[in-house]
Each structure stands twice: as structure tokens, then as C-alpha cells.
Length: 380
Image (cartoon, rainbow, N blue to C red; front, top):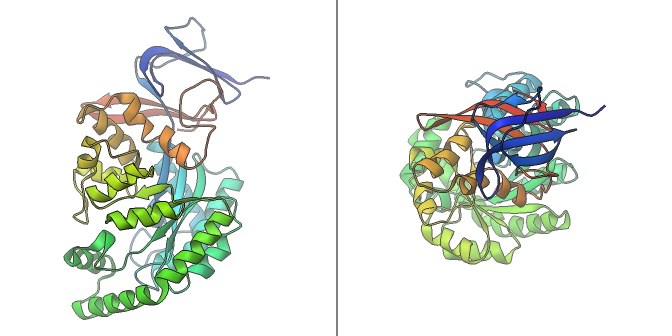
């Protein structure tokens, strides 16, 4: 028996236009997208609300906050994963790439100790049908971390891994050119005194000299061998972006300067910025504002990073405050990330695409999710 749903009286946001219309879904697939209304008795009346494609998140470490909700508190991993998934789904995200750190500034950090537990709980919960959103893995590979090659090798054949990134959080460059921002962030995160911070900085800078070049080359070899989409991270200089492009990298994550973003555009890399940066109007590290790049049309994808609701909020900010056409603004949180991740079955409201859909109403410039469907099934 066919599963059918009809969405009526909605403002449909397609890749190129917004119109009042009707969307028909059969067995989880978009079957028809038509202007005007219908008379089907069972149709769901959206009362003029927007119907958007489900959002696609490429880089969030939101799971960590659910697993370690307070210092010294560890929540059961499957329960933490389900809680994280609920927050993701409620934000309108129907496909998420959970970012797991393979390496960190602090070698005994929670994110390193718990990386296998987090990956295992995602795989288990997804396999048992406990999750509302569709989950994949994004491996964040810290090239200066002593054991990053071994960490990646342990995940290399995991089918959930669809995206990888090369990172270097060594203080004094990239994200943390401004050392006072490095102190502010990591002293607050790990409660280290000034002497401990100086020791930490020295170790990280020594590790960069010792490991970065060799690890970067070997990781790239393994990434390309497995056909993974690759991102660079916190590119600051023209040379950073040129090196990324020459290495087959397709995604420039969180460029920290306008020069880096301009070079990424010239070389054909997709540019990703943080939605919290967009909503707040500034970077927490004192780097380039996402709004400034958006004004120069140097933005292709938004990531919610650490605030799931910021993804939809950021897209509507692009539309309402920066006057981007709504279809273009929605593409940065749907069609464009789908393209980066090679997910050709979703990301737009078009006939033949997967019926991942969200109902959105804008209240005084704050977009609120009123319904979420994945594969045509109501999930939230």
C-alpha cells in the first residue's frame, strides 16, 4: 500500500523560486510540486507557512555537550546521542554530519577519550532506528596530533564516514593568530593557569614542527584512496588556500580572512562559515565576520557548529537582513551542503528527491520550525 502525503496552502521554497503551492509525496519521495491549492480531503493545510527542504549540517560537535553536560559528568552514550539527535531534528536538520575530533589541543581531553564511544553510539542508535535525523560522520583530523594516523586508520573503513577535514589548531596561526584569543578560549575550557598555558603552547608548537607535514601527506593519501570529500580548516592566507586546492580539497571551512575566502572562490572551493558567526555578527576568535563575506557573495554553506538552531536562523538572516533571495539563502543550508557531501538524493524540493521537508513560520524575524518530515514520515 502506498504511503501518500499532500502539503497544501504552503509557500514552497524550491532552488530557484518561492510560490504558493502544493507538494505531493508518495512512499517518501517527492512526486509532484505544483502551484495553487488542491482539494484532497486528507491534505495537510500549512496555512501559508514556508515549506523548505530539510536542512543539512556538515560540521557540528553538539554531541559532545550531551555526552559531557558538565565537567566531571558523563551521560550514558546512547541516551546522549538520542538527546543530541532530538535537538538536531527540532532545529529542522534532517541530515547531520557529526564531527568527531581525531586529535585535540589537550592530549587527554574528553573528546579524545570518548571518540570511540561517540562513534559507536551513533552507529548503534542509527542501526536500531532510534534517531530522527539521518546521521553520518565527519572526522576532524588534527595533523599535529601524535597519534592522528592511528586514530583515522581505526575509522577508515567505517561507511558512515563521508566527510573529513584537515585541522591545525597550533597557537599563533590560522584560527588563533591572536594569542589572547587562544588564552581566552582554552583557559576557559580547561581551567589552566598561565604557566600551564605556556607549557601547552610550547608542546603544541613542537608537535607542529615534528608531525604536521608528514601527517598531512599521509592523511591526504588515505582520504583520496577512499574517495572522501575533504575540507580544509581555518585557512588564513592565500598560500593556505592554494595548498588546499592543489591537494584536491573541495571545502574551505571557516576561512579567517577575506583574502582566504576570495582565493577559495577563485580556485573553485566551496566556502563554509559558521551560522553562530552569522547570527551574532562576529567570530568568537576575532576573525572575519560571516556577514562581511556574505555581503561580498563569498559564502556557500552555513554550519550550525555548536548551536543547532543557528542554521535556520542564519539562513533567514541572509534573507531578511542581507536581502539575499530566499531560495539562495536556503541553498546554503540544503542544496549546497548536499552537493559537497555527494548526497544527490536530497537537499531540494524537486520531483524525484527524497521528501525531507520542514515547515517554517517566521515570527518577528525569528524562524520557527513547526513540523519536520524525513522520507515523508513526520519525525518532529
